[in-house]
Length: 168
Image 1 (cartoon, rainbow, N blue to C red):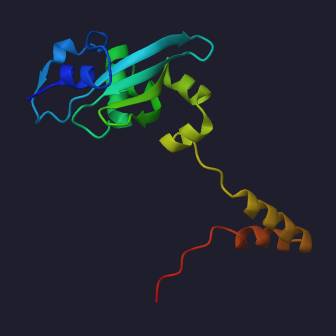
Image 2: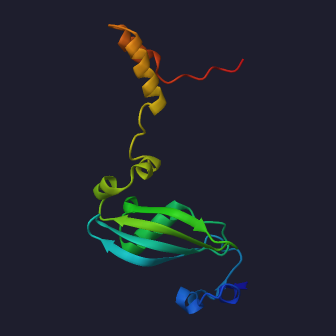
Image 3: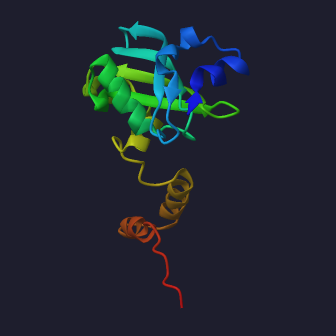
């Protein structure tokens, strides 16, 4: 068995009482699924209809904690739906066992879709990616200028996504 209090108070100088670790004095070595989340600087943002906070995650026997697990834990502790929670910007501290990140908890799923950044919505699968790349659109426009009449619509069909050739 290992004393968490000694590990975190000795080298890094973190106050164990402040981090809430005195209740977790002893932990078996097999307990690798354990992690504790602390929400710091929690503030209500009424303009964007969300709560926003900085997270400190303690995971002594793990390399890291997945975003899904963190979202589930936040939803449970803040009495919100898991689909309204967004976790991003996770960074592991040197030496392991600690990570920091940010979290947003929206009041509803509609507000999440309305105010969340487009790249994050695309990453979560809530928004489709644009059809064509910018370079492809430019080359298509140049090709259209060179042809006349119904050939222009044929140019659109010809410049669709290219299929991969089967290996020989």
